[in-house]
Each structure stands twice: as C-alpha cells, then as structure tokens.
Length: 472
Image (cartoon, rainbow, N blue to C red; front, side, top):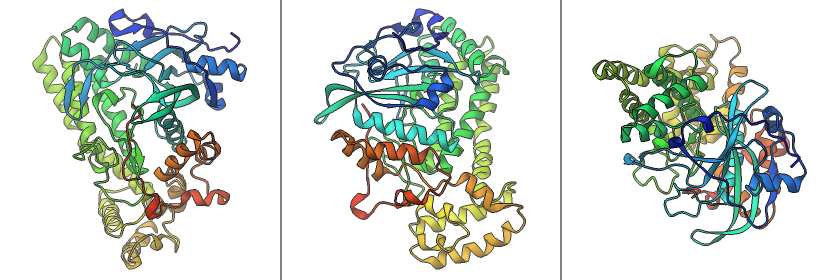
C-alpha cells in the first residue's frame, strides 16, 4: 500500500460495547469516480494511484493504521423510538487530525452488512452516493457545518432495490459520527457507566470548554440552533431529522431524501417517507428542539441528583426556541442586507416570505436578485414585490453595505433537485459530465459564473421533482 492516511483512532479505544469491530466487505470491481483533493490535503492524506485508491475507498484494501468498526446507536424515527439501530451499511475506518487541528472520522458508506443491518444488504446504490457527494460539498461551500465527501467509487456490483441498480461506496468525513441516538441507546439500556464515558468523550472531542452533561447539552443546543438557521437560509430541507440523524457536533449529517426548495412555501416537503410533514421546511426548528429534549432525557440518567438535573436541562431546552428565533433573524436579516438586525426587522422579513409563498417566487433567485429589476420577475404578480420593496429600500438606507452583505449570504447556485436527478440518470449510463460540472460550479456558489447561468434556472413543469427518496 502506498496511499498514506495518518490515522489516530480515539473511538476505537473506547470499550467494545460502543461498536462492533468489523472490516468492510470487498466488492467485485471497484472504480474511482471522484476524489476530493482539497479535502484530502486538509486531512493530510497522500493519494496513491487511481486503481489503488479505488481499492481503499471501496473497502477492498484496509489501509495501515485503520481500525474498522460499526458504531452502535438507537434513536427516534418519526417520533417512534427504535431501541437499536447502528451503522447498518457504514464502516468507520478511523480518525485523522487535519492540518487545521480538527479531528475527523473517515467512514465508508455502503461498505456491506454489519450486526446492525436489520436484514438489509449493507450496500448503497450510485444515485444516493452522488447526491450526498454533491450536496454535502455544496453545503461546505455555503459555509454550513456538514459532513463532507472524500471519494466515490463504483463497485461493479448490482444493488437490488425496486429494480437492479449500480452499486457504489461513499467515503464520508465528519467531525464525528456521535448522534443524539448514541446517547439514547446507553440511557435506555441503563448502562450508566457507558453513558458517562460517552459524555466525557464527546466533551473532550467537541466542546472541551464545557463541563459536565448539562454543559454538553447547552453546547449542542447552541450548535444546532446555528445549524438549523443556516439550513433555513438556503431553503434546505433535511427530510429525515430523526434523533439518529442529529449530530452532536452540530454538522449536517445523513443526506437521504434531502432537497432544496425551488418555489418558496413554508410547508414544503420532499421526502417520500414523510407522509405527514413532520420534517417540513418550517417544522425544522421545532424538531431540533424536540431532538434536544431527547438528548436531555438521555443525559439526565447519569445524574446523581436527577431532580436538579431535570430542572437545569429543562431550562436549557426551553431556551432553544428563542435562540433559534435570534439565529433565524440574524440569517434572514442578512439575506435582505441588514447586518445588525433589530427585532422590528422581523416583520419586514416575514412579509417578504408571505408574499413569496403567495406569489410562487423562487426562493434562491428572489434573494439573489434583491435590489435589481429581476427580483420582481420571480413573482406571479410583480406588484406584490414592488410594494414590499418600497419599505425595504427605506430600511437599508441605514445600512453601510447592504449589497455586500446580501451577496455574501445569498448563493447564486444551489444543487437544484431536477439537476441532481438529471445528474444521477446520466451517471447510471456512465456519463459523469453533469456530476463534475455541478461540483465545479457549486464550489463557488456565491459567484455569478455567467457561463453556468442555466444552472440557476428553476425546473420547468415537466422537470419538477415532487418527491425524494432515502438512500437505503
């Protein structure tokens, strides 16, 4: 092996009850289709030959220093508690310390069966792998905390879902894969020693400035509030905000039926499995509070004085809605050019959003073109924009550089759903042109890039993607 990955595996040094040690299952004919050289450089990974990297990132060859394992966790899925989940198709190879001093996991997603597969085949097909690669890297370029994509590999094998589909493996990088559900499983089992060990580990790894379980809870609350507000600001809908998909590190994790809104409406849902709109766009802040309450419930179990812990945890959780509102206002005020928002700015933002929903305005393009004549063209009745804009223009006369503020937070390009579907359809036929183009353009989402203006266009009626699907 010549590919060098500087592993330093802290999670593998935890007791065996946290995971199952297991190597990834080899695949028949791996072929590297994408490798993130910028991320590799950050991680201190020296690439090898293309064929060699295909073997490593497919799971056929375990690099020196790796300690592969599948992590244990549980979680609430659409509000119902599942007592044991875990990495059913993912293998954590190990961890590296990046050149920025941050510790990160390197995980193979689609790496075969584990004890947590619950009857599944442990594999992934090409479509969800490419979707997560493009969307997670776009989120990183937006400046939103997220897992990232290091590599994508075709396996040369067929995966059976509704039909026969080409298999693939994604190499995912995260500050950790600790979830709310990681704490829930030990709390539910009454394994308090493990729960305490996990709490200490999470604090040391992610929030060393905090102390104790409630310090961890408050730190996760703050990180999640910033994250959800950032999602809302780009029209992102996660689609499956279960507690096993809620990262302690405050990163966006587990891109399944995720999507970005085209036409704005607060009740937008794309996920085919979200039949009642639990995880609709506008519900995401409330769900983040609900998930934090589940973490609080788990953390309380290790307290000697549970009554005091309940009181402190309740105060921390109850503070989250107001924190989310402040973060939301900070983001959306910036989207209309206000760098230091006042509470009185909130009606100006909500009035615009109300008009956008009523007049079927494109979310991304409306905010990107604010202040130009093009903004009104996104409304079915442009007069609805004009009457709002009069008040808005008066407000931003009090701002020093509103245009610079807006251009720094309103992307010109997002991974539009119809483009993602077109990309997947082409890749299944062996054409990665659109995949490569999307990655190139979305690496600079705040730049105009006139040669790629077509990627800013909303879908035509025939191109609309009404539903997105999980990657399982």
